[in-house]
Length: 512
Image 1 (cartoon, rainbow, N blue to C red):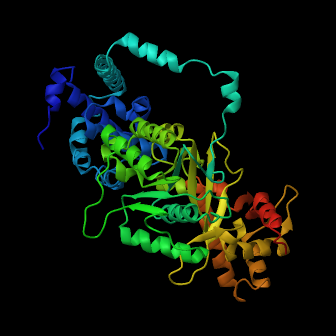
Image 2 (image 1 turned 90 degrees about the vertical axis):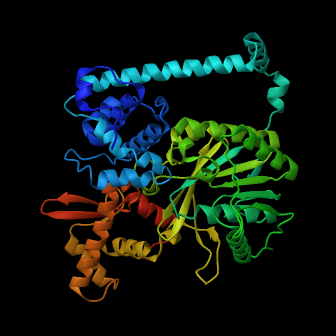
Image 3 (image 1 turned 60 degrees about the vertical axis):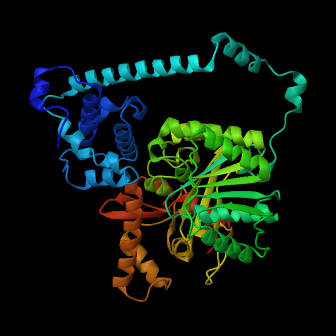
């Protein structure tokens, strides 16, 4: 590998060029867990080299969800493999991991030196931003003219204008609003596409969406992943499951998607001309709802970091306001977030959510809930007070589509049956919930209620399986979602079904 410099060269010179400086800082983040604190104030936007920016962005996201390299880090092992895997859309950045590791010298680059390099990175970044601001100011024309234009927009509204303003019309009750953007984040293969297609079918036909009111109107569906045939067949199956007419492809749903024999649409929302084209298409077709499935297909991978995508979403918000359409943007959430690890609220679900969440009117988060799903939403427009829980309408072959569900139904029979064991055979906890004083007591109750065959070994095995599953959830940070908690009680383990779980079953009328 040809490096920019050798370690001996660096010892002779205390100053590095910009490229070498960025390599050293990324190398430190890859190789040395103790450097994390020093690098905490660094943003991917501070880097001038796009490969280093992408590398550092993946590093920081890994830190945020707790995937930090261990102290005895095997740099050829799982940590570097995980970073490389997350850069699958940026192979040119992944290819430079070795270069960054070679650039970092743990003996030379101690904490004091790294702090100095971070300061220099910030200085260079600020100079670059100042140059960009000056350039933008000059390109925009006369500075005073811009001030006058901005000042006109800062005029306070009159009392009449304040009183006359209204909450935008809901296209889907509590979720999608005309003139506003909603984001939907969820893990890979979690059902985001099916849910967004069902929303499209319901709006296009006026059918209720998961038992929520809809406002009938045309839908413009922009799909960058699945082919037109797949979207067509899925929407047709959803319509059949819901008992409504399949969409008319000239009036109800206007589909933009790749075909088997043609290339996928190449739309880059970071490009002003492409955004203007999207706006004009919306204005020409006048849809009530625009679906963007998914965000990463409409922006280059190098732009899928923090502030850059926040700016794109703000631009999409302008498109929504100018067109009067509701815009639904499908986005990806880190795998860990889908189980509650690293953050669980809708606003913190998506990659780069600190910037994305503030750029949309409503943020929503899709998460598996046993055999079903829950859809949570929050924003500055009216949303649901509790997540909407739903499940597959039926399991027959060819069926596709979901219906509103109770949490117990979505979780499946097993947890409900387990609740029955706790409620009938366990002891009532004064603080709420039910408990067993030991694993043996729970195993005996499983046998007594017939949940397992009359075999001590099978009953003990089921107890161990249940406890192992919930221990894994707790260790991953998803403990708040688990219905069972264990606590030491002398030489035994006290096993408790949490009060909130019991209350939810009882509220749904399930009693034993």
